[in-house]
Length: 157
Image (cartoon, rainbow, N blue to C red):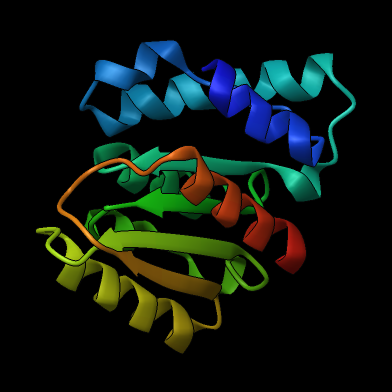
């Protein structure tokens, strides 16, 4: 967490996490935790709402996408690493114009085809996104990857 905080500090960002969500697989319970964390964040800090992004790896990457789809008024965009497309049915495309999605996948990730599909759909629907494919299998990236994604979000917001 300290290393991730360094990335946030270098950009002047506040990074928050929902500790209860990290081991759950129920999207709706996770949603409740994330919204509570969001409310605490905006209730306790002077937050620019155009700079609230979510990050997630694998199932939590899907969760990050779901949160953007369910609550586009609260979140500016997401970084989704090795996610799949399960949340797409919740997208309200008319509400997602101007949102940002940074997708990361690995050359040998079992979700690589899903990431290509997500990238294609986002492009077709007018969501600004990018897809970065790096070597390896299904795995979380290093801090440089997170920093690169964060800089892309900052430049495109």
